[in-house]
Amino acid sequence: MSKTAILEYDGKKYEFPVIIGSENEPAIDINKLRDLTGAITLDPGYKNSGSCESKITFLDGEEGILRYRGYAIEDLAEKGDFLEVSYLVIFGELPTKAQLAQFETDIRKYTLVNEEMKNIIDGFPKTAHPMGVLSSLTSALTAFNPKVVNVDNEKEMYEAVCKTMGKFLVIATWTYRKMMGYPLNYYDNTQGYVENFMQLMFKLPTEPYTANKSVVAALDKLFILHADHEQNCSTSTVRIVGSSHAGLFASISAGVSALWGPLHGGANQAVLEMLEAIQKDGGDADKYMAKAKDKEDPFRLMGFGHRVYKNFDPRAKIIKKAADEVLRTLGVDDPILQIAKKLEEAALVDDYFVSRKLYPNVDFYSGIIYRALGIPTEMFTVMFAIGRLPGWIAQWKEMRINKEPIGRPRQVYTGYPLRDFVAMDKR
Image (cartoon, rainbow, N blue to C red; front, side, top):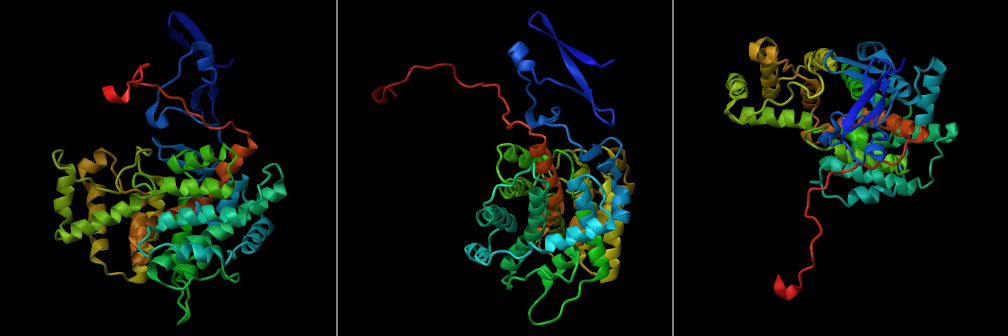
């Protein structure tokens, strides 16, 4: 017997169906609420509102669970690679060996970016934030790929996926090259996707470049951990922009802009900025742990706790090992990373943090890895965007194939009621 919820309003009772998700999450379907009652719900930030039904990602913040298409993030990070997980997230099933090889081959077909894109990137000053440049370049791809994708045509949709995966990686790394004043690099079809990220970023024309295998493995895991995260700010943005039937590049460009915010993708940049501030003040980690526990002190310890995970962030457990391996392999001796390790060690045993479950999160460890690789803090959110790309594609694809209606939230108007116009000489 299906469940229902009863709402009593203005002396009348209304019955609404209850939908139960595959992980037993209940949702009251209020699709007809306004038609039946004339009222709407008010839910700032949509913390209690489901905007869609999705088969892509399951997240349980209380239990610290994250799964893509039913597969535990721990298994995917340990046993899969980024393109394999990207295929899973976008198309719904793990690829066969042949499918994965074909996917990588087909991505390589689209890795060349139109040379005129260089004119666009040349128009930005070196001081431009890489996320602003990335958002603009992603949107500009629409001009060079004007054909509207027919989402009901599997071949067209597949080609659009491969094109987006291929070109986005290249333009993302170009934002770094622009900032550094380096010549732009091209994709090398003899190397893998993550290896290509490394050479696109760091290869110089004056010397050969070989990516460190431990670093490649760590970045591969990090991209997997960022691949999707349910209906967060940037993902919801991609879906709502796409609901107007805007194209894939335009929708992803909007997602990049949403990710840019310090409360979302910019969190790992905030971690390093905090560590740099601590170093400038003498590098006393204990002093700042005490400040974080002082209710009267405005200081906030960045990279600890998570607004969704009320337990340990499952992604942090995985990436902590990778961060330790990167630091050990590279032999990095960086005072800022030493401060980070002291904060981490203290927070994992300090009762104040343990009792409140303020554990180091994925942003904390990803910032440490990026810092160790010599990636500037302004590039941290670009790194996040590269990992999140398959999730954005999958969410856009699901929304369009499901023929979801255009997003159109309601509001409660609290402004002036009708007023008479006041003539200029009487104001």
